[in-house]
Length: 488
Ligand SMILES: Nc1nc2c(ncn2[C@@H]2O[C@H](COP(=O)(O)OP(=O)(O)OP(=O)(O)O)[C@@H](O)[C@H]2O)c(=O)[nH]1
Ligand SMILES: [Mg+2]
Image (spheres, rainbow, N blue to C red):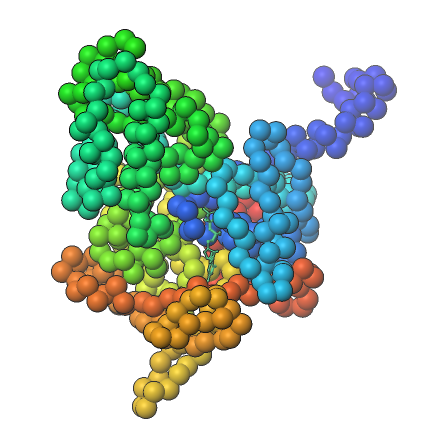
């Protein structure tokens, strides 16, 4: 049927539906932003969206640098079941006087930015002008820890979780919970109080296993670490059992109840997340607080590497896993980004990237990962420091200058949140491998000193002239990798 075959009425209806039709035809790119707690997800998304919608200089983001982005704006939430990313609230915190970092967010959220652009001259004749919906999905990295659960039953999971709890670096944190288990008769009739107590002790163990550095890895299940809206739900009232105590799991026993809840957790929590959100992502950035890991020493870096390996496995699961049968992930670009690079002098930015590259390469190899393009970068989505040089005798030390947050300490000095300070953050080693050597002396934990700085005050006015929308380090390169080709 050609358009001329349509009756006038139908043609009119088609015209008035034009806007709607063109909206349906607008391609959508779903960008996942994840990372463990405090990795910098909220700040990254706020800075990214602010840079897109307010314009400003982003020299390494080609579409913007070439002036091809005509307009970028927020649009209503496309998915009714997902909370909206509270962009305005986070931006308001950064624009306050004094500026504050946005509050911690503990659940999945989403924001749609629509970009209108003119394609590169090569494609221009074919496309005219272009439009792209970018749906940014912020979700806790802890939830990715749950993927391996899908292929385990309660007994297998219990065996693994117990072996982990008894490993030398976790056993202290697990002591109370393990003691509770040793006095437990799981074949006795199901008892909600026992289930609750066990789940509480298990949760406490998991949460302290990630201490002293809350930024590093921890064993799952993910919702025990970050329950989101499920806090207190029976879906989270279970814990693993030693093999003997669960044997047979007679009907009506505590063991049977815990096993059933484990299955419910998989089918009501884990599966829907991977099926409805994760598997629909096109691009992914994984934010990593690599500096904290470096500061904590080689064991933390190896932990970080295992996390990266786990993340990679999520994006290319083996052929026979439950996830691959749910729906194959379609990610084609994956970026591991070390955040908060503004804690280092720029002379160390490449070194930070080299360390992440080393960890990523080994993780890629161990996960036999192939398919998507993987990049690593060191960035600061919002730069809180500037650089300076201090002289000490003949020596020149590259320093960073910022306003430490109230309560931060450096030696005996404690800061009030108003005074600027110059800090020599230390150098990262030239050879990244040296950070992974277990023989490293304990003092290596002092290799990099860093303080938490007050964020720069973000202006709500549009940037003028050649100014960037906000200060950052390499945010533009990250955006170019994640979005650039879809705006060509
Ligand atoms: N200097 C500096 N600090 C940053 C940057 N990004 C994040 N931070 C610091 O890291 C903290 C956590 O950042 P968020 O963006 O809230 O991290 P998140 O991953 O969303 O954390 P949760 O929501 O708690 O999971 C902030 O409060 C800042 O102190 C950055 O680019 N530079
Ligand atoms: Mg957050």
